[in-house]
Length: 112
Length: 116
Image (cartoon, rainbow over all chains, first blue to last red):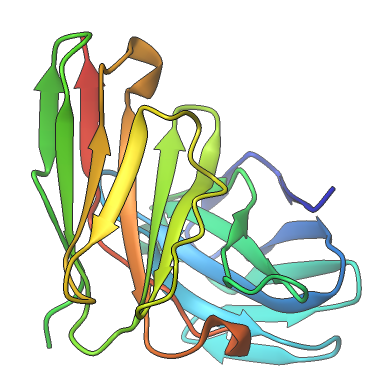
């Protein structure tokens, strides 16, 4: 069964304290891995798409990496405005719909 | 440009009533998805529309749920005889071209449904 597991469930950081969020996946033929950010009461906001092992993408303080079994979202010197829930999702290679299979998310709180 | 819009933003209904949720995708996007986000459950796929093709309804949890997409644009998700377990945030997403190419899905703000 296709599955996405994110850890930790919650993470508290001090401003400037770098860390990483993990997304482990089991899928029959990965087509793409997606990272989204979700603020309370809002819909998910797209961050990155990764397609193949070894690929990396960066945006401001965020860097996403991908291996054959997992993805990491590295947050460098976070600021309070980075506080949100970060969602990881995959699409399956054999799917003809491109539906996203989501993990449960990691809720990040950055304290000033 | 305008993103995905959904209405209403909040809906409170009584058990047993029918509800309709609306999604207006990004202009020109041919693929449209509905997802449900329940407390402690994460986001789960409900239904997918692509152009004029038959929709993929494999994620609908029961026959009380149905959806349609008129004119290849606006979509309506209907829940008949609502139950308390239907309480959740219903999210709509759209993407630009064939989903086989892993196009990015852009989400709307969601409709929070509360069934009393």
